[in-house]
Length: 171
Image (cartoon, rainbow, N blue to C red):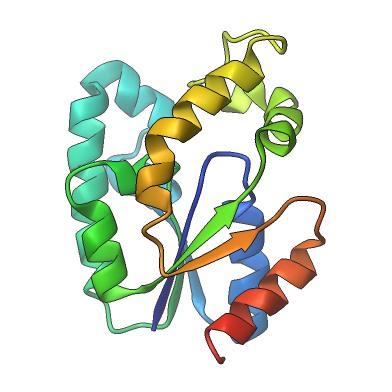
């Protein structure tokens, strides 16, 4: 079984996927880290040197290969992954998809502390961050909401979120 976690940056995909994979003894794959490893470049460097279109092609190739795997995997996807090509369709077809939903307030609070690690928001002021997130989420929610399961992460402990995922998937 493959469990795919989708959602906006800052919603907790990396953190939750790590705890979930350990708890159910599944292999953990972070799609962005896998793309970096395969290309021997950071995601920022790929965007810088090859552009976003090239990155999205590399992302799609890695995604297809992972989803074709027979292994038990918890797959943490990039925030933009579900938006491109028909990625959300193949994610739903080949895995159990879970949308980790967080409010704009929660995302703004978390992301304002991580800007240096997030090229997309590095140059956005804290005061403009909520508006940026709101616009971006509006565009992406159409894709995220196609996930088979929807879990709110606001004001919740990671262990509770993981437990809810396990219960929803009857693991």
